[in-house]
Image 1: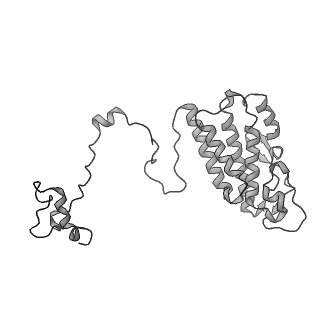
Image 2: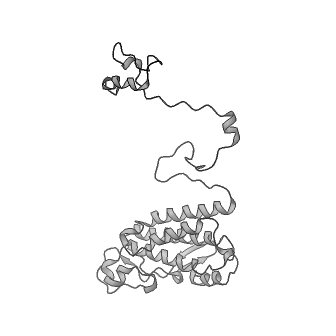
Image 3: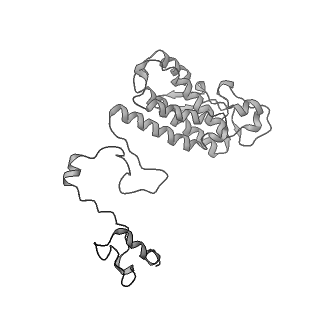
Length: 252
């Protein structure tokens, strides 16, 4: 079954496209399509004519079919590219083959996902919370009129789609779905996986005391001989320790 047929199922709210998991299905389609597109790009090939009727959901796999429009990156001969106007990037519509790049294919992926989600008009099909807004922002970048504002690669777009999928999945189940970052080195714990969540009561009752912040005053060893700043005596107002600043800083 192609995504064009699935689009009709979404419009008619046919199971399993009739409930809150719909956007998770759409995002998963996008990630799997990007895997195939990313492989072609790695071989210096452009798919050129990505659209719902050229993507097939077969059993538990998603296949990109009809490779007749594939061209090499930078290819200028061979006539006009085979494209479908509704899914082609604006620069390709105006300048033809000379404007074909990997970002044209990513535009096609964004438009394909947009075609599917635009058919989800029932409230029961909408994702929970801010999931719809996150989804919309990813598609807005993928289909930006300026190619320089789109994703730079299939892998970059796929990472963003997976992030939105995890967000929607977490909102639906009310359970966090943290994942290690692909941009930073691994850590012993997932950083900020509980960002924004108020710590449990036990944290305040039994937790280790937090260290006090430094006062910012110079250490006694760095004061001038005979100085009576607050680091030596509490009876002197704090403002008097400014006399030590010329020699109290780093390297002083």
